[in-house]
Length: 427
Figure 1 (cartoon, rainbow, N blue to C red):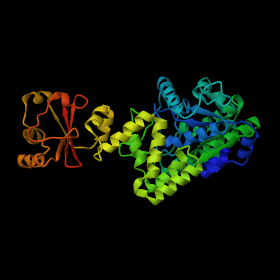
Figure 2 (cartoon, helix red, strand yellow; figure 1 turned 60 degrees about the horizontal axis):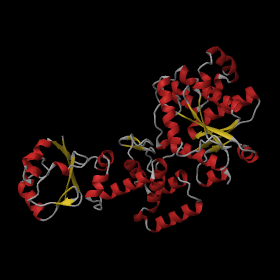
Figure 3 (cartoon, helix red, strand yellow; figure 1 turned 45 degrees about the vertical axis):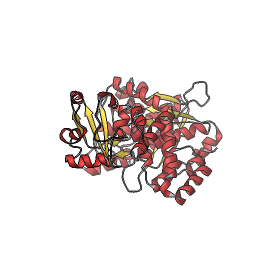
Figure 4 (tube, rainbow, N blue to C red; figure 1 turned 180 degrees about the vertical axis):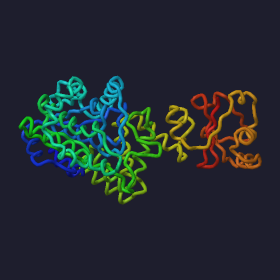
């Protein structure tokens, strides 16, 4: 399998430096991508570059993950309008370990492999680098005019916000990373998003001028949504790979709810399905778009790879709850996080657990105590008609609540009709 050809049909190449394909055809090559360690989790905005490394390793080459411990202390002006907050070494090291754990689900780090994935931290070679040595060994090789011509710098200057010397030198530090990896890890290629092209080319230029060597660059398109919205962003913020930050249910729902146009693009870029299988799925989807064939295949594949098959099945069962297919047992088997994710935004109220000891008539509970119904006559009518459910079980006017019925020891889920849910929390 040819790496460049694989990326091309998947729509994953934005720019590639001449000679890159020849280098990859000549020998097993090392390539790196840098990741910002200012969080202890990657998010789905990182998935495109992760998949570059996945395809790179699958085609027999060696992927290097660079965690920007040093550059994370500086801040990359690319795509930013403000200076970033600087983190200390302890936090950065913690974040590095968390990131490696997530990437281990995509890349094979086993040392015995000839093309084993490797993780490095640029703080390790930058921490002893004095300012004077940096100016002498790196700074003198690139002119200010060259650096000012970069879009990331020009955009900040033209915005009126300006740019600090710290962030201005970011491209030099990143360029030195490439030089260091070129000299110490035989790295010949740097990859990243299209917004990183300028920084990457700075590295190839530094290698050419200082080491007299040849190095290459490849970038993938920045992923966007067809409606112009930012990919990976929801009302709650980023969609994270960490289950504690974004539950597997919410993660699954993000992919399931993608538009038809986006699903056709994402399934090529974020799965390993071969072209023939993707073409068949696309045909099936276009013939019956209401079945959401592409979205279901996409959501299943990515949820399993990022989380687990068990998490996928839990997310699938949780998704069916809102469409009337769930049961009391399904609700009981959900973790509290997943349960709350499913019913996020549902009207809710809080009661004291002691109220459950008073054998309150269900009509009084649904009206006076919780205001699920605005009147007792309405509550009685719907109970009589069999339109009221508690924890997915139909209840009537003779029903009494008890503490053992609480989900996760603290919740009642009421349902009026098919789609109107109400959550009661007992504390």
